Image (cartoon, rainbow over all chains, first blue to last red; front, side, top):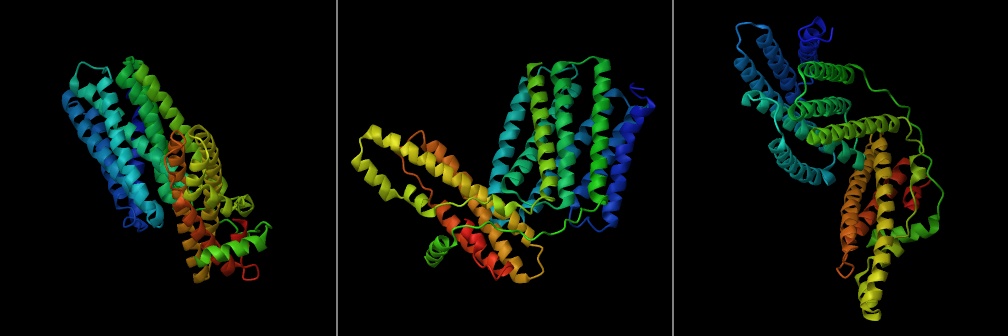
Length: 256
Length: 179
């Protein structure tokens, strides 16, 4: 069961991508494409890229070198779209809050730059797991991309939690999926790029990566399809306090 | 392999953080009724004294350099404590304001929007001021500019009072009073 090219393997590779294309279609049908144009592009293009890599893997006419070249192109397109998608989510979350949006933009720009530098340094110190530069480079690029992605996602989570900003449901679901995917993929690609695992271990790692991605696509489905719980509004009871003193003080302050 | 272990641990910590934020977010939506009770009162006058540059000059003149450093550190710690409470209160007010954004009355919505904006500004100023205080704690002789926090807090009081009036005209200043 847990073998490369088993039924489960093929299912985990293909199914999340077909589901992602279906999600993109559903998204477009519901008229959400205008609100999240980058997500639609990400859903269609990254799924198509992954399916192309799968086709290259099973087609006997595709050489190993060409397979890795296709994988490289797919990874580059997917990574670029993911970074733009994170930017789109960040802009959507900050748009209603002008008092912190500028700070947020400055911080994420600085943090993103620092992440690129740190991940490049980490890649430079990695020992590499293959004598073929095309393969070793691919694994390092995966590690680098997921490190930057995780840093950006984490920054957005911490920033919004610190200021207690409210999210729209789908933006939150999108970022949650991206975050979980980035955590697992960073860990696994770090092991692949630096630990030189055996062939069997590589297969298990592939299963873990594909299963995680499947879960993330299901999370996106959940956040798109399941409506938010309607919370009954309760009148806020405010605490008693030294009103007279504060009234005087506040009126004095407000008149300044 | 050390690098791999470091990255795996970092990824695991990040996953815990992300899941923690997710869980706390789902809890927030169901338990906002007791939020206002978590607002702590702050003595603005005492805070104003702590950040008054004239007080700094006075203490610097009256005390020896070593005594001044000790006193200044204590004052900075007290200032930080005030700012932390102000920041926490601002966070609570952000939540209260956001809940009021769904009100049907446009005036209430506008007041809530203003409250949220001012509370976020205060939260931002409080964060920056705290960072500055921690830096200044190492060099007590340098000046401390916490004035933006104070002015932000004053504006916030105004917004909260307006929202309180609009939501509950019978008790016009209760939100403001708790600040």
